[in-house]
Amino acid sequence: QVQLVESGGGLVQAGGSLRLSCAASGSTISIIANGWYRQAPGKRRELVARISSGGIVTSADSVKGRFTISRDNAKNTVYLQMDSLKPEDTAVYYCYAQDRLYGEYWGQGTQVTVSS
Image (tube, rainbow, N blue to C red; front, top):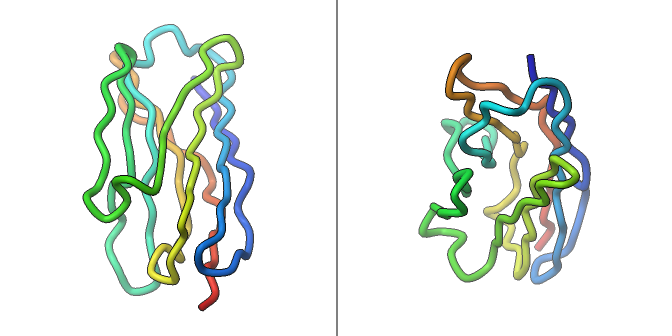
């Protein structure tokens, strides 16, 4: 089992920055990818960014050039640096981990609100 705990959400003005963190604990040896999804009210959950164990990054077109995903393997922590935030980035952000053996794990979600 893997537990994911997110932190770093909050309220920020448009153009500002936030950094989300996702700390993993438990049996992480078979994790092959980590990432972030988000879900805005009335909308489907969508991929924001994903990083594989080999360091390959995939991100949504809407956040390219503004959001950066990174990972600190020593701390079992994944980060999402969000710059130039827009009101349309407002959503609950969820951390996830893809396990080669056991499927996916999800964090509890953290609210990001961007005011105009």
